[in-house]
Image (cartoon, rainbow, N blue to C red; front, side):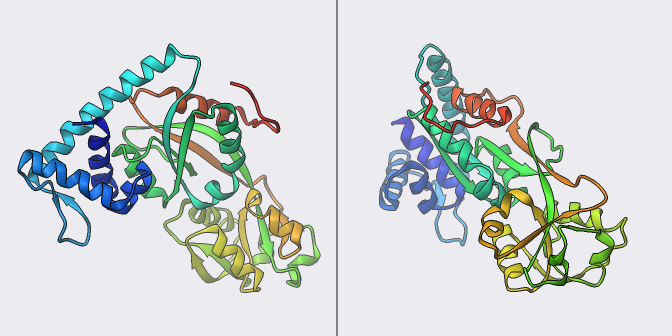
Length: 301
C-alpha cells in the first residue's frame, strides 16, 4: 500500500467529496474511486457509505481513517525533518481563508512565495470562518487566515496585518460629495451589510452602535464581492476594508470615504493548530506573511 492511497482516503473523508479529493491530489475522480475500491477489496470491508447525501465512513472506515491519519502525521514529521537537512524547500500546504483576504490580501504574498520556493506548492481555498476553524482542528487544512480571530481550544493565533475600514457608496450618492463621513450621518441611510454570523458584520455593528447610527439594512450578503456589486448599483452604502476596493476606486465605480471619529481597523490573524509540528513550507509562509513584505522581483532561495 502506498502513502498516496492513505492520503486520498483521508481527503475523501475530510472533504466528503470524491471530486474535491481528486482536485487536491491532481488526479481524476475515477482514479480516486479506484483507489478507494482497491482499499475496500484489500480489507474486504466497505469503508465509505456512498448512498447518503454526504459521504461518511463506515465503522471500519473510521478505524482505517484514524490509523491512516496517524501514519500520515508521522510521515509528515519525518519529511519535515529530512527537509531541514536540504537547502531546497519542498512540500505542499493547504490554506483556508475568507473571500476578502483570499482575493485581495494573499495574492502578492503567494506569488512572492512561489518565486522564492518554486519546489513548494500552496493550495488556497475559500470558506466561511467557522468552517476554517473546524477544518484546522480536523487537519483538513494546514493554515487558516481570518478576520477578527477569536481564541478557540487547540488553535494558536498569530498576528498578520490590519485593514482600515472605509465607507463605500455610489459616485452619485449624496455622501459622495465629501472625502470623510461622520457615522451619525448614516442614520436612516440604506446599508448593505455582511450576514450576521460574519465577524466583520459584528464588528461594524459595534462601530455604528455608540454613534447611534441606525442604518436601514436593505441587504445582508455573505462575501465582499457581492456587497461591492450591490453598492455599485446604488442599493445602499457599506463599510468594508480599504484593501478590497482599490480596483473599483481607480475605475470610478465606487466612492471611498474615510470614517471620522477613530481609526477603525480590521485585524487579520493566522491560525495554526496548537502542538502540530510546522513544516518548512508552513514556517516560511508564516515568516513571509508576518514580515509584511513581498518581493517586487524574483528572489532566489
